[in-house]
Image 1 (cartoon, rainbow, N blue to C red):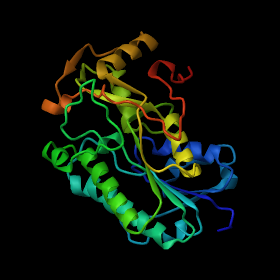
Image 2: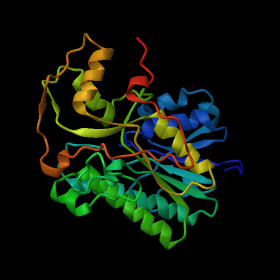
Image 3: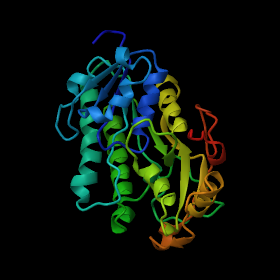
Image 4: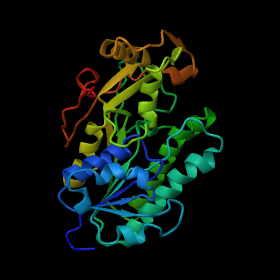
Length: 314
């Protein structure tokens, strides 16, 4: 690789909700070459179609669970964005489907980074699922910030496998990087929405799709929400701003699913909408996230509210 290479962005076929769009924005926003790991042409054609991608985007093949699989791709790069982690609610084997790829995969990537003297900083995409899933009451007066952590015991007991995978993988990453004094920053977004650049529907957008596709009811849940562009930009800033450090929670709004249903009805009045809610989880898992207060710190991006998010054309 040439000495001008600055960025290495890792992606996987089961990327997190923000992964594909975040990486696409990296391609469009950075002038230096970008290196992406994927072995599926169907999942990279939209990246290669971006302006400048044919000249600056380079594709590699690697395996999350294979030791040393990322060594060659990472060698010579200055920064790595690790955005990949399986996202699924239909889990038959949590260990194989979610926990191993998230934890072992993250550590494999970090081990490869530790071998490369050129790597200056790693940006890890974590999740608010690694922050608020702990059974604590989340009333309006409670302030949730980056010091909060989800409880692995609580997540496992309630079979919240995605939250468990994100919590365990981020915790393992911090322990490893602190042990070797390695510079890492984590980005913890809430539910990510926005325009899709990839041809497939991801988990976050799939939720909205169900609400607009004649679903008879919606889940009785409250989530934090954030626009995909407001996830992509802080990733770039986290790498470029020298003073950036630690964890960054990205939540623009907190809203019950019923509020999202109402907003969708305002935007698309002719689309069928569910009129009833269903109790899908119990006890503390119904807790509301109104206590979250955004702290921009070094970044200070202006976030899109749900009402002001860019609309799809057509």
